[in-house]
Length: 188
Image (tube, rainbow, N blue to C red; front, side, top):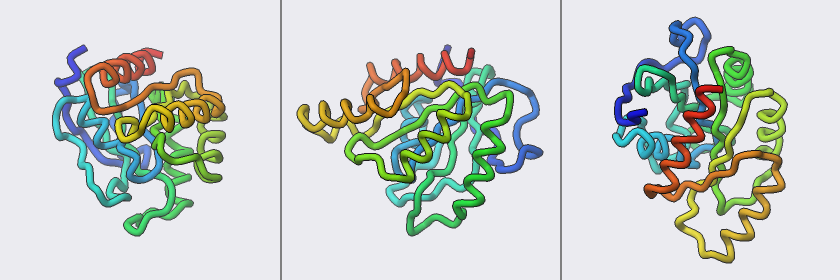
């Protein structure tokens, strides 16, 4: 798979606005400012997804067609931010509708390894796990931690109940492992 053959296709919230070609999709989800857009840019080898230091900039589901074979979908972050304009109800409705889509083959949940999960994180994890969709957990901001803090955070992350836990440090080996996990989800 040539991950550099990617293009932005559409932004949507409603099912009627989403791509109609029935290609498989893998959605990237996580708290606002966890690094979803940055990771997408790293995976695709180009600045295709808008990333900002200010949280809450992504408002819609953004579809990126990869190798004409599947969509990588960037979603708005959950959790409150000063910049968020989407209410919790709108976000929940959009997620509920999209998680029922047959073309959505899997979910990549990004969590900041430096943060201990709060109540909203744990509720979102339970919700995703109950969806029946395969999920890969990607822990971000790994490169900012010392070994002791990283080991403690990884131990906590393993208690969340995910089969796949990957680390993202914005470097080659981790990026390739995440690509393989996403390709596996897309084929699921």
